[in-house]
Amino acid sequence: MIISIQNAEYKGDYKINFLFSDGVEKSIDFSPFLKNAKNPMTKKYLDKKLFQSFTLQFGDINWNDFEMCFPIWDLHEGNI
Image 1 (cartoon, rainbow, N blue to C red):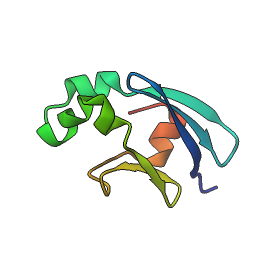
Image 2: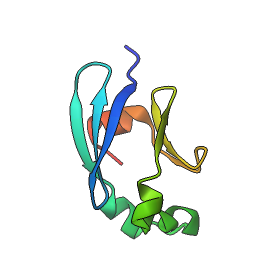
Image 3: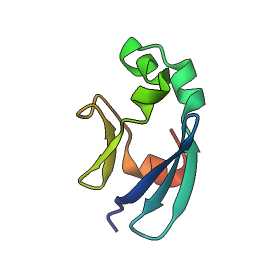
Image 4: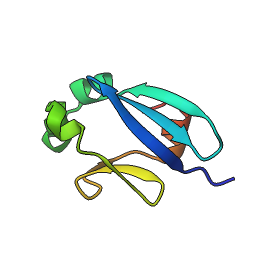
């Protein structure tokens, strides 16, 4: 089965609630990932306005033309 993201809703701080095409919902807190990032291209998303600027394209979440993105299955499983 191919899983896609149907909806992604910003919930405050660095949390996003996801609804996947199979009906699964997950709320993911990206703060540990962002705070532990070594790459400055990733760390810059600690700016909450920049973090909130995500879009959904082709069933996937991305920031700034896929500058930061995650495998859909990892998000589905709650692993980032």
